[in-house]
Image 1: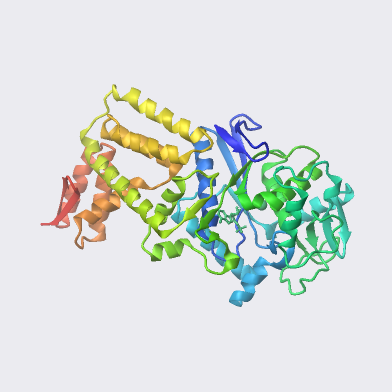
Image 2 (image 1 turned 45 degrees about the vertical axis):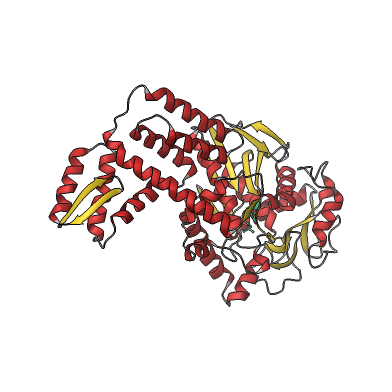
Length: 474
Ligand code: AMP
Ligand code: ZN
């Protein structure tokens, strides 16, 4: 596939280091609060990328960290540890906060059909790795001690601003955003690897280290967790665009100083979800969560659908009106799929359909392979529905595309069909109806008949109509 690489500023052929295999790293959430739907936009797009690479037949290993220590309120190493902020807010321990919000994050991901990465590693589990890498950086002269903390010396690098779109001036603005400047730094761009004697006296989690009791900086987490599970050559690194600087810039600086060669070949950055009033951010107080969407009557997958309608390299504006439009479009799509499911068993696949089906599958690949053009891929989905192909072949392709897009269209169609039959049909009967639908879709008519008999024994009759499956009490 072709993918935009933030490092080269070009759309490039994606070629993994080892043919057929992809090592992929994702910056995980800082678990001090619920994820907002902006954070989740990044994870949705990364999920689609991972699934498309798998769809192409590549063997992907994806690793994600959980930031449960070291991420300060300013990415420039000033302010409080965000985890401590969460603990104070809720009068709990940092570990209770981390545990609660890690679970909440994965619950949100499940609702959005975001696959859990193959390896998920909390930063607090890797303290020994951090100490090992920091010690080596000191030995090699890339890190120094000042005011009790350990800093990375950016002046030792030939090129620090590797993404190239930042000037010294931008950096100074970035640093000034923080509450106070850190006078220990030799160079403005230097960053903390390990906090020891610092102003964070009430920091809850501290570990012994060669430099005294302390805790790691945020950036070192990702370098170490990635190298621990994916080795010293990484194919693909993902995150939201705000991570590009300073976080990813610092990750590259310390990783390459440590290993002595190029670390990661492709950098994938998802642009932000904004509201009309600007960037969505937790520090501003009010923010939108998956639970809030549900409370307001939106299926979380409608939000996923909304995200896929736009390209990941454009910022996306969230409004309830935009989400309503997505909801309507999603429901229309689901009802068209419901009609297909109904028609499928009666329409066997004709050999003549194959050419058209192959053309549509190729159009899907073309869209997704062009820097993950999900909006174009959705157009292909509509083209498929319109195409002159039998219902069961259409459904097969739709399921295939949905293994990448994960819009849950078949399930949504199933729900619609049940709703259209209405009434208070017992769950046991509904379950048999669902199984029967699956049996029919799989053309197992003998099983479908058996299930119809079972439904009948429970006092219900089931019938396929134009509007969907009709269930009536006998
Ligand atoms: P955090 O939990 O703050 O470490 O962020 C988790 C992920 O969300 C990171 O990849 C961020 O770059 C990303 N992110 C933060 N804000 C937004 C936003 N408004 N839109 C999209 N992604 C975001
Ligand atoms: Zn990271």
